[in-house]
Length: 258
Image (cartoon, rainbow, N blue to C red; front, top):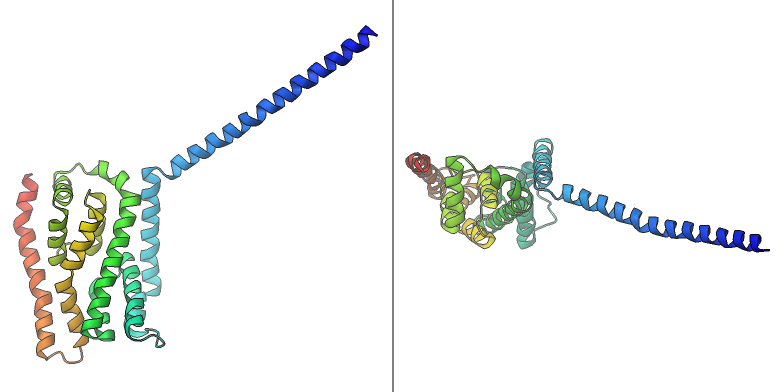
C-alpha cells in the first residue's frame, strides 16, 4: 500500500520536474531566438552594412541608366497624353530620379527647355534638381555618413568637411553656382558632413538657378542657334565654368595648406 503510494508520489514528482524543466526551456529558447534576432538587426543596421546597401543601390541605378537610357525618353519620347503643368510635374519627378542615377543634368536641362519652353521648363528642371539632390542627400546621410565620417583623415578631406559643416549654406551655394564640383559629389559630400538639410536644399535651389536657366533657354532656342537668346545662354554656360576653374585653381593651395 505504502509502496504504491510512494511510487505514485514519486511519479508525480518526476512529472512535475519534467513540466518545470519544459516550461523553463521555452523562455530560454525564446530568449535565444530574440538574442539572435537582435544581433542580426545590429549587423544589418551597422554603418558598413548601410554603406554597402548604398553602394548597391547606386550601382544598380547606374546600370539601369546604361541599359535603358532614360534620358532619351525624357528628351524624345515623353508620353503624349500628358500636357501642361501635369507633364512638367511628371518630368520633374523623372528628372529627380535620373539625377540620382547619375544622368548628366545638362542633358536633362536641355530636354526641359525643348519640351516645355523657358518658364515651365525652368520650373520643372529646378524642382527636379532639388528633388534629386534631396534624395541623394537623404540616402547619403542615412546610409553612408556613419561609415564614411571616420575615414575623413586627409588634410584636403578634413578641410572640405570643415567648410561644409561650419559654413554649409555659403559653401553649397558656391559649389552650385560654379559647376566645377560634380553634382553627385556635392550631394554626397554634404550628406557626409554635418550640414543641415534645409541649408543644403535652399542653397541648391538658389545656386543651380542661373546655370539651369542658361541650359533651359539653350534647349528652348536650339532650333535657332544664331538667335541672341541662344548665344547669351551659351555664354552664361561657358563663363561660370571658366570662373569655377579659375577659383578652384586659386583655392587649391589654401586647402592644401590647412
